[in-house]
Length: 382
Image (spheres, rainbow, N blue to C red):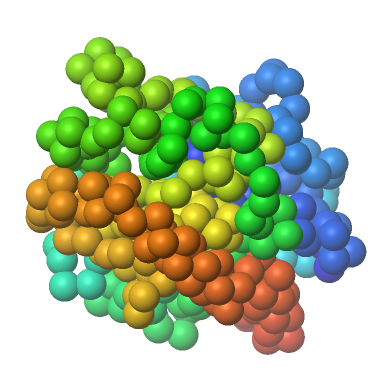
């Protein structure tokens, strides 16, 4: 099968990891993949497959959104015409180009699939005001013009359906992780940082990730000196938070780590992974930690609560993150047997529901279904 994949390679974010892992796996299964992306002249990131690439010109690009140039639409159209794929799959990048893709693909008579990553608060909760709510309101009318829209959970499907996307257009295919690569193993990370108990946050240092609540809870819990908290990642809030929550409190800021082997070493050697987000989609970082056999604690947002339900981890409420963490952090510090048990349950849950192998199989089934019933004379609405 010839697949034209539209996504991101940089800067590092969940969308980038998703595109890398899925395209690698599709190539491994013998499919032909062309990657169309907003790129610049940077060294090739680690672990990226070798495939035909097309660079789409852009004005600005961040971890959250991308602004293409006016020429990008023409470049994309001409490239798809030349590639002649069987199907186009867009890992949506919060770019204006996302809204024109259905029209472009209809003109070229190409089936079009989208993966919609935008995070949300969760079942029974309102989307927080700002980017997330605006993105759902803007995208919903256009997503109905795609042949299929992939989301990560039934909750997200219900949310889009309530905004007007037809249910038959929405496919639920959860994120998956390579459970061979992300697996329990030996690590020297505790010895490196002089820690007896090691806690980890990995992700963007941004308002929606709610990292400050974790930092305040850690500081107020007066954790023992041999307990350390590693903060892995970068983002707009890092310069304002790091000076107030430093090594004197056992907090170690590692910044963004591009080396996947290093990230796996950290996960294998830690005791607890903490994700205090206010909104999420389905966190790949969470699945990677679980796959490494690491006990996990996350807020009940996006699909993360669903991943950890029924004892696979600890789920907390976004309204009282700091107070709950103040209670739970010392508990996990003082009871190693608890983190060991939860780590085993986390690994089992991933093996049962969230493997990359199953993800790709479901994706192949979706492609085949769409190609066996090609859309004819679709009405494209603006």
